[in-house]
Picture 1 (cartoon, rainbow, N blue to C red):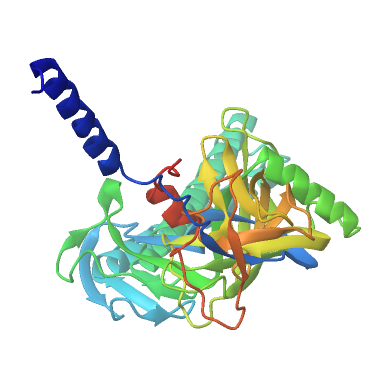
Picture 2 (tube, one colour):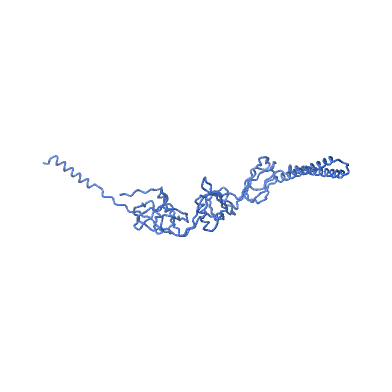
Length: 397
């Protein structure tokens, strides 16, 4: 007969055997992730700097009423292109014609008075040697002649002023350009001390683009110009693109750089001038601007989507000959047809990860697969942007 203690020990031993048999097998080590790799491309490139800027007309004119009167007519279509000296507005001219006629009459009267006083002075001068007239009388005649001459000058000035005011009743285009809408309709009183604004005209061809460059970019631009054996002030190519355009299809020239760097912002104002025969460029539009800085020989280029970003800056992931992943901090250059120039941090013979950054981890192995260059670009999928947005799970021990 078994004792109670022996039974207890037997049951405990059986439980231990059962529990030990239920333990899961050791976890298998995860397979290294598959990544797509490529070798950097080496080629000669021209580095560019890109900015945002604003388009401005090369010339802008405000058409204002310079005399007071009733607007008689407007001789243009709102928004049309007008040639220089084209008739735009007419202010009722009749009051100004009457004013001119009155001033002309005053001038004729003044001229007649001058002739009379001159004749009286001449007669007095003839009588003076005969002592038939006193010297005081001659002096009076001389003064009267001088007063009459001054009155003629004043009358001529008044006539000129009346002619000018009559000329202001007809307003013509001072430049060739695109005219705005008329701001005052015919029949309204315009002019006076405020010189009523009637419309505006802007010249669209050519057109300016203004933008600011940093001190660092200006120094690099100077060095590029020196290599070109030119001066900073000489015209250089500049390219712009609108928000709905691909790339920078419009080419112009830098025709102005400010004479100082603003110490408050560390930037310098620059202006480019562009032909605009088709009228696609409008004053006030924001544009993307690109200027050449320097040519690099045998520059190292990688796919833009292979570049990652962390708190320390930009980087690429490379796979060594033992298929171990390494992170390389890099200094970036310009963008060249979807490829990014790497100034520092990557050797031409290294294999960098193009797709699969979200799966690769520095210090761990990966399975490299060559990039099919004939395949279409995958965009951010599998690249640096997805890696930054979707952090991978940590590897299981």
